[in-house]
Image 1 (spheres, rainbow, N blue to C red):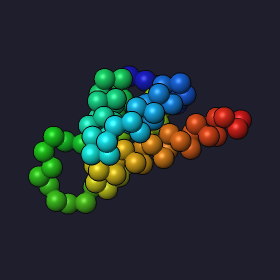
Image 2 (image 1 turned 135 degrees about the vertical axis):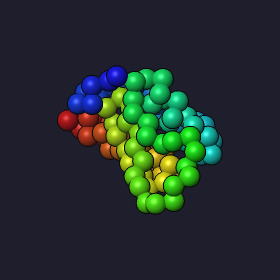
Image 3 (image 1 turned 30 degrees about the vertical axis):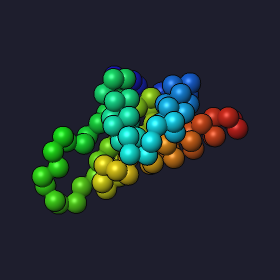
Length: 91
């Protein structure tokens, strides 16, 4: 598992580019695969049977994202990743 306090900026940039190249409908699966295959965190169950409000989390390469529905995760993760990349570039 990746250290949550370390951001791998090269991997983040590559992942953002990859997610931008695939269709928006496939980004959730793409982010899931990035998390699972690269030691990240993926808290979305396969079957969503409980209708109570909750937060879902995706965390990979040191970049976390949360959302109230799984479909929010790719956009939220890409926004967080872009923010981290921009801050790193201007540091």
